[in-house]
Image 1 (cartoon, helix red, strand yellow):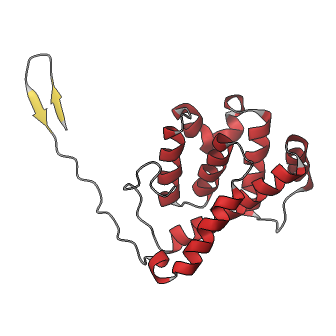
Image 2 (tube, helix red, strand yellow):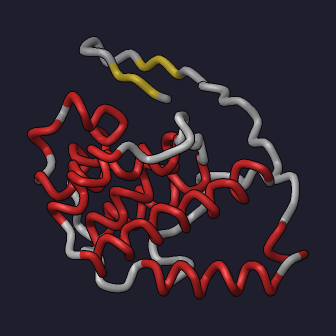
Image 3 (spheres, helix red, strand yellow):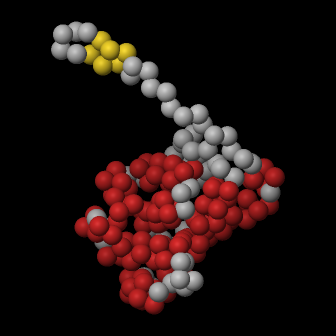
Length: 173
């Protein structure tokens, strides 16, 4: 990093980042049929859902699950699709930043958290009912499938320690 001051002097500071951790396992290479099935599930799960809402759900679940690879991928894809930086940044605190999202998106985010965490072993009735008010049954079924699918991808990413930072928008589409 180089900084120039008003007196034309220049400071050169080198920033050393932590070493990148290698992936533990290239699971897709060793379980190609499972990978292909997951891709088919992903394609099926996103049918009929608004693209921006779908990506917001994937980012939020990935944040909860600490899946750095999926956060990197879906943030880049969402930005490339025209979503605002502000709405993406606010996802980790969506409940305190409700004014950035529609009522339908808020219901989807709340459902995403309930399905992803399952701390009480179930999705609370009030969360499900709120989502059911904003989504037709077929669309709600697709949303639940999308949430379930990203949670499965997150489990592969976190367990195998897939490395974030190298994904290019649209790389896997």
